Amino acid sequence: MQIDLRGVSFTYGRGTQQEKQALKQLDLHVPAGTLAAVIGPTGSGKSTLVQLIGGLLRPETGTIRVGETEVNERSPSLSSLRRHVGIVFQYPEHQLFADTVENDIAYGPRNRGVPEEEIRDRVRRAMHWVGLPESLSDRSPFQLSGGQMRRVAIAGVLAMFPQVLILDEPTAGLDPAGREALLQQVDRLRRERRMTVLLVSHSMEEVARYAEHIFVLHQGRCVLQGPPADVFADEGRLRGWGLDIPEITALIHRLNRKLAPPLPLDCFTAEV
Ligand code: ADP
Image (tube, rainbow, N blue to C red; front, top):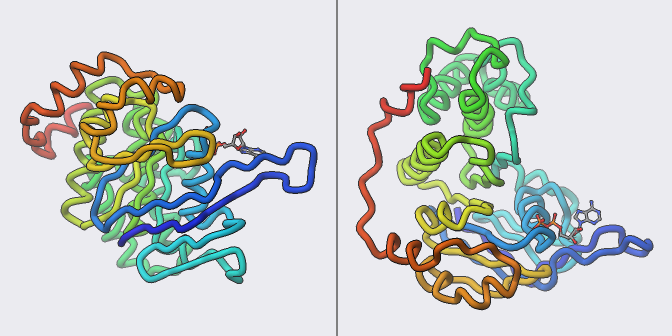
């Protein structure tokens, strides 16, 4: 499903002393099946953007379209967006709560009234997608490693079969191998299911490797966008906007190098 934002603005605390316009007349288009990234310094509006696309905030002006669903400031409900969009927030493992891995992943579909038999199938598939072995189904999520807990949390979002997946700093706190494995899996799943993925990340390296298109936010506006090689070629402006661009030359060099094919799925379960 494609994502389309036209003239979207959002202000926190309108009419109060804390009034803050977080997004200003934002236009953004992500074609269906694309992995796009959003980068920008703290306070640039990334998290507001995520919540607007996910139907958690209402736009103050403009329209947000996900597939055929469109909302604007007058829409009676934003739930139509929530049906299509899955959001993995930062440190999603902090939200785990159920007694078993299976029940945790099943929570969303069960809440939505999906029949029990289908739920079991969805849980099994979601665990496979994130590289969790079925043998962990009956374990308490709290007995797992940090990386496994994060996978359980992501599987819970995937079990809702979202057509748009938003990942807000999904690899924060993971070791380099865990980061790589997670992003490779997301990328493969996107191709298999033709999901549209929006990745919010502070890691320029990650974004350079996985995104097909990058949006740079600064003070609530999209100030630059394009394929990674073009965006990172604008090093001076990126630094001016407060982005931490490490070894940009090496990054572009790597971008231009043919990347290794993804690892086979089995190798991601090695940590179990
Ligand atoms: P980012 O995710 O890029 O750090 P945010 O979308 O969180 O940016 O914030 C954009 C702007 O909106 C910032 O100036 C921030 O201080 C402000 N903001 C974010 N959340 C709130 C809130 N709940 N109330 C008031 N202002 C907020």
